[in-house]
Length: 231
Ligand SMILES: Nc1ncnc2c1ncn2[C@@H]1O[C@H](COP(=O)(O)OP(=O)(O)OP(=O)(O)O)[C@@H](O)[C@H]1O
Image 1 (cartoon, rainbow, N blue to C red):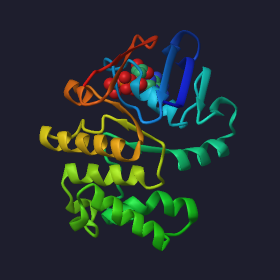
Image 2: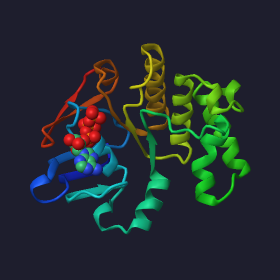
Image 3: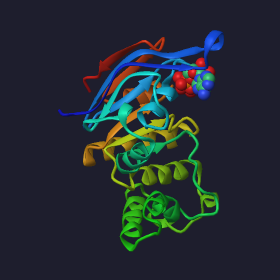
């Protein structure tokens, strides 16, 4: 399998001097194209920090970060923004949908920001994605008219809008009941299989982690213990 991204000796320190907190302490991780990986670790171990760096939303203090053969540590802010829009999707614990907009408008939004308007092709893709996540009958519903699980499925559709190679999900099921959580996880698995989209999913839920092919554990911000499940 070809390598999608690699970080080596990744260090992230917040603050300076006596109050400095060293969160990531030389972390190594390689993701292959098509990986479906859970990111586990105790609260405060640095999972969100790692996802934020991999999403190019924050720079590491030191270490290397290469994705799709591009050296992220040498890229300008504008290059990072462009790269992020093209290649990375995000799903968060809280859906972060725009409340006054419909499901379709929320899904199309990332593209609309990129090109300055909602093209017909973008709307078509948005509709297809909403159908894919099982919400074809909710296309024109506003965010406020959707259940928690439905909102999170809209957020998954939105993350896929620009056909990203990598989707970073930070506790995507953390706010959902067990049944909705299971359904969202099933959906991520199907998309991973069908489109070979790579997923890195941070979770405290061992059941969600077990549904992934890889389990990556952050231990003391230092080592990453990696277990590849056989199922
Ligand atoms: N901007 C910041 N400034 C200072 N410290 C920070 C900042 N962001 C995170 N931290 C610290 O870094 C550590 C790791 O936080 P992070 O959110 O990455 O952990 P996590 O593993 O995602 O935790 P959880 O499972 O609870 O979400 C915490 O001790 C946190 O206080």
